[in-house]
Structure formats: C-alpha cells, structure tokens
Length: 208
Length: 222
Image (cartoon, rainbow over all chains, first blue to last red; front, side):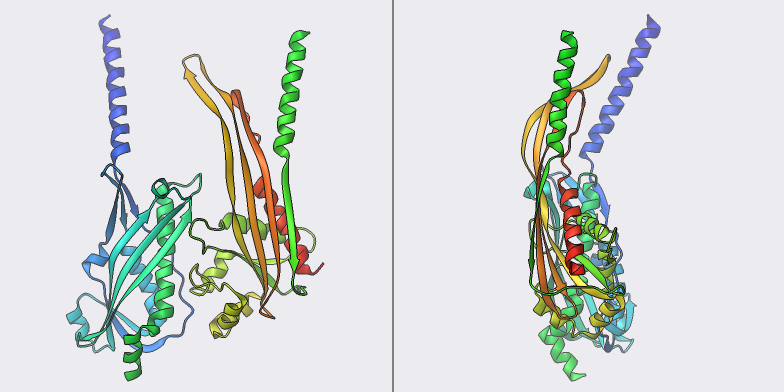
C-alpha cells in the first residue's frame, strides 16, 4: 500500500514538472537572431574612400515585440546582420572602406568621408494581429555622412520593408527571420541606388 | 446480407466523394500580343510579383511552373528565380523590379544589367502574379484519445481557388508579347470515421501544370 502511494506521488510530481515546463514554454520569450546571406550589388563604384562607424546601439540592436497581454513575445536581434549587410554593400559602392571603432579614429585616417548608420525604429506585424497572411518587418534608419574632420555632409532618413507569406510547416521565428532578411535587402537596394541622389550627398560629390 | 448492402452504400458514398474531390476545374486564357520563338541557347526566367501589400506570389509556385517548363517535349532552359535575383541584385528586388516594359528598357541601359542578362541568355522574362485562396470552410471534427484507443469523427470541407497571371516580356524587343491567365477551383473533403481520410483537390498543382504547359507552347511559338 505504501509502495503504491509512493508510485502515485512520483507520477503526480512528474505531471507537475511537465505542467510547469509547459507553462514556462508558453510564457517565455522567443529569441530570433536574424541570419541571412546578402548578395554583392551590381553597381558602379564611387572613387572615394570612406570610414564606417557602427556604434554600440547598432551593433547590439534588438527589438522586443510584446503580446496583447503585455508580455515579451519575441526578442529580435538584428545588429550583427546589419553589420554583415553593410560589410557586403559598402565595398561594392566605394573604392575604399575602413571600419573604425570611433569617429576620432576615422578623423586620423584622412578618408574622404565618415559614414555612420543608425536604426531609429523597428516594427513587426504578425498575422495573428493584422489578420493578413503575411509577416511584415519595417525598419527606419538615420544615415549620417560626415567629412574627415567630422563636419556634417548629409543626414537622411531611409526606410526598408520586408514581408513573407505564412506557410503551414514554417515556424513564426523562421518567418520573422525571412521578412527581416527581405527588409535588409530592401535597405541595401534603396541605399545603393539612391545614395548619389540624396541632395546634400550629390552637392558634396560635385565638390570632389 | 443487410450488412453487406450497408457496406456497399458506404463504399459508393466514399467513391462519389473521391471523384468529387478529384474534380478541379481549370480555365486557361491566353492573350497574344506578339510573335514568339526561342533558340536552344536561350533561356527563360520566371519571376514572382511581390509588390502587393496583402499577398505575394509564392516562390514554390514559381519553382513549380519552372520545373514544368523544363520537362518533357520542347523543354525550355529555365534560370532559377533566386539565382537570377541574386545575380541581378539590387535591380529585381520587390521595390526596384521593373513594373512595365518601359522600365525594363531603362534598366537595360545599365551595362551591368545588360551584361548579366546576356550571361544568362535570357530571352523571355515571365512575371507570375497571383495566389491560392481557401474559402467556404465548413463542417467540424472531434478527436478523442482514451486509454482504450483514439479516433476522430466528423466531416470538413473547403474550396481552393488558384488565380495566376503570367506576363511574358521579350528581352530582345523589350515588349510584352502576351499574357496567360489561369483560374483553378476545386473542393476538398475530410471525412473522419475513426481515421480521417483527406480527399484533397490538387488545385494549385493543376494550375501550375496547366500554366507550365501553356507557357511552354506560347514561348516556343506553337
């Protein structure tokens, strides 16, 4: 009898542990680290050398999406993928690209310009909330271009957008990653094709 | 005897359901605007339109049409979609891709784009635009798991509607040479008597194979 009751207690304990695990899984935040490959753009290079500075806010950028009840639902880290993207994009746009740890370091290098990108806003739209069959990612950037002395050349806003359809055998995390990669490619295409069209950049290039 | 008659009735009902499920109606509409034809060293690239805000043409459907065109008699060399988009980056992204042949004409003035197009030997660009929609869901099903066993009971049905347009651009003449539209509909059923028996109408697969056949004939000029 005592043995039977011990067995029952063991089963109850296992069930409780399983329930607790299920509860924790249901409430936990899903971490998504954006990963993707970015092709080299087919564009004409500008005959200039730039220094690029990624500040800590960009390098460690992460966005948290909250559920309707206010709990953390997704933690999306995209800082490293942005650096990888610029690492492919910038050498295809300029003759020389030097990554620097600080603006001061760039000033000592005697480059033509210093480029400092920044993420201002990140938005995620999930099918459960929008009632559309697509995952969407929208990112707003602030792009700064300075002279070698650190003086202002241009400061412009750029937005990128990516979406991916829902698929029955794909997780929400994979779909978010896919939509973010599309948004990053959108950033690369609009930045590379419109860089020389930014009025201040155009004026500055004419002075070189 | 009575038992056997009951079984026959059930079998007949299932047969009717299967035959109904197999029925997918596909309509193909072709509108030709120019002469076509393709040499053995030329290829076709099929690209999905992704500009709409609430849907996008699935890459799986694009791939399916490409595979259909690359098989069988008078098969055509197809450039894989992602390979082409990556090689052309950033000119064929959702926001930068040409929407009209006028835009393609402008794009071809870029030396890098024209060179890549020649490297691939692309003679025709096929723009696929559309999606498959599921509607009229009805019925219900309940599944039970007990120590004695498990089983599902009930009935469900839905309708699929695949609607796709294929616009064919001639890269040599930089004109739109024609449009092929496909509309496929079909009803699917899911009866469950202990085990669920899915009787699925292959709507998208039918739309894909019919569109691929028609596109192949169109591009070959037959």
